[in-house]
Image (cartoon, rainbow, N blue to C red; front, top):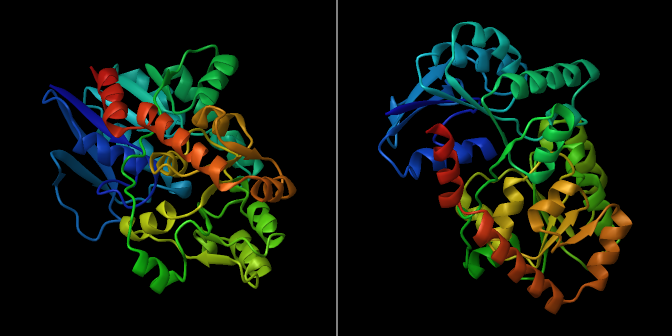
Length: 358
């Protein structure tokens, strides 16, 4: 029996982001009885705190899993998990502690370094320095480094001279919604007649760039779902483009059925992320067979195998949307679904992780 401690997430049931969805699938789709998961969870996030979930043991810590508290949260999780056989650490926040952890533990450590957090615009210079140091410790002291994108794997090899194991994300948890009455009645939308985007409202996701492009195209409708009120950046962008009649800005939607109804019926999915690796919202869109127009960076090209359409400015996005026809979009959607079926199924992703734990 391999006891695997999962460290670095808010916890399960998944209610937050990509890592939480990964853990949800790991514990739900376990293919063998010789692996047992212990998931460390943020007590502050869960009103009810069951001792187990789908066969996984749950351990609660009195700290937030994100922000500055993520550092002691991860370190405390490592200390409590020292009796497990394998530590799966998701993200680098607490990996600054790994040199100390290695002084008293030889347990197998697998670290998914996420999407090069130190390059994100939202962090100040001190935070970027700290995250860069934590990343270096993660790569040096982990038994296995997991990269979720070939671009990240190439970066690890070029920067640290270490091979990373490529394991991406699944997206087949996204299921198409077909309730045209709700689509029209609740949102005033018609199937195939709008573009869609879901993202955290942060500068590196190029929200303002996408909105600027659609402001130039008053005959094209855009629906964006995001956490507009979580930052001054989000509030300012919402004020700037909120008066555009063709742009619908919706607050976060946590019910999968509602989110899938909106995105699965769009005519084109716009993906503006410029940082990170393989983005969960992108592979979910691909699994739904949506035609994708993505920001032109190596991570998005790797995810879509250069088969999408790409843009690097508001003007380019506007030109792409004006020039591409429905037939070409349908071809791209079909190609995205083929790639997703081959690479982004949770069944495949979970088996890859399980092979590392053994």
